[in-house]
Length: 313
Image (tube, rainbow, N blue to C red; front, side):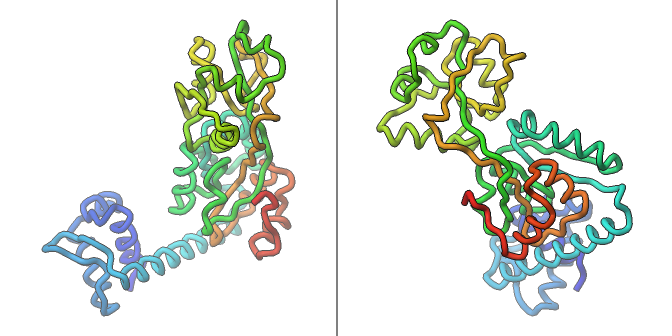
């Protein structure tokens, strides 16, 4: 049995059983992939993939167990490489961070700046997507560390640690009627068109729950995954904006006025996540503590040993 064969099995499964796509991703030939899959099935004495003619149609129950084991083996091989690189050279490496636009634009810059000063030889790659994509990239090994408000804490394969808490903020054009109506209420917000985040982004679930608790239906006319896009459309007079408080910059957003909304919506917790079976390198720990000073190496290691919990779960 060879590691290459395990890679072929996992890649074929990841490509929805399309052997041609798997071969392209692995820079090899389709017949070569098919042959190696047959060889490992013969060696194991079982069928991993059901077939109809030459086409793979499904994963067998035994095959699912084989694939789960293959993934664990490949992750441990990757960990061996990470351990070797960590001890061989502390000044070289790549750290891939998966996060949402709001976190990348407003929460990460100081941590990234500090990390690049502290670890000048380490290359950083910031990969942006939805919270669901962040989780997918963590699980498949595309990213080392993920940062998001949604989704990360709901996957048992991931360690999720709280970074910081934040609230939503209402933004309106400078002459908007809400500026003259006294204390802001959900009832008054529900009478205006709203511009806010996509349903999977930046605490949107807290917004929806707040209106639902008061039997109100918000008139959401436009959604986006980007805070800057939301502010642009609010500035054009298309609606009242609900954004993360960190996304409002009084020096830049001079055409908008903020209205506090802490009393309207639940507080949001942004979390950092990584796979439970991932070997954390020295510079991984460094970045995590720069992101959230409370995330010391001792705290992270205690959590990995099962001695610590996320108090916000």
